[in-house]
Image 1: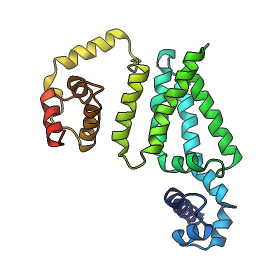
Image 2 (image 1 turned 90 degrees about the vertical axis):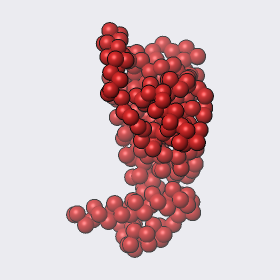
Image 3 (image 1 turned 135 degrees about the horizontal axis):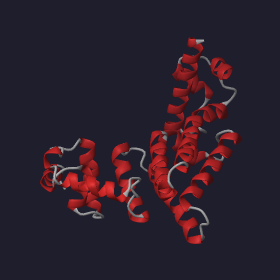
Image 4 (image 1 turned 60 degrees about the vertical axis):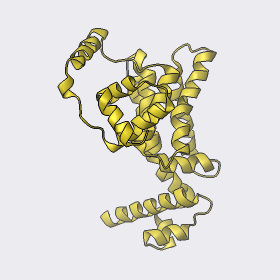
Length: 248
């Protein structure tokens, strides 16, 4: 059983690699078999067709999106939309390879069941973001918000995921406004005051991924240096030092 499971995993990994680099149409079962170190007959023993391979590769994406929708729906009404947006983006980034295959060739790939599940989960997400009793403006903005966290992932496959996440969320904040806090206003104010008086707790440096994200935000000009520094928990001086070193 373990050997069979390992064979299936190798076939799926090989299929994903071929689909992402060559596309669905230009990938043959023979090529997948060769990369997995098995015969075509072995591939067909585990998977009836290329469509079934795609369905298997899509399953984690669909299941994760369904979980995000379920968890967001359980949040307090005022934070549901942002909980959905952030969770949706994280899933998109986690599965962006196979997502790109599906988006570019969805009319020819995947089982009808997987496509139907993706459509269903999208509309549940759309309802959460638009809110109850949504009018035309809210419905349109919900569609735009979901596109803001989906399209950039597909079109920027080569960008570091952490950097891309920061830049995408910055765009969402400009569109939807700041993320509401799940904590009471008094608690938020108390934490903010504590942070203002706790200079020594700030990190003295940024990670390479954080530097790149800060650089992108600075170049975009959508936030001030003080706002960017506050986001990463560093001083203005520290941020400037990193920006100078990065060539901004």
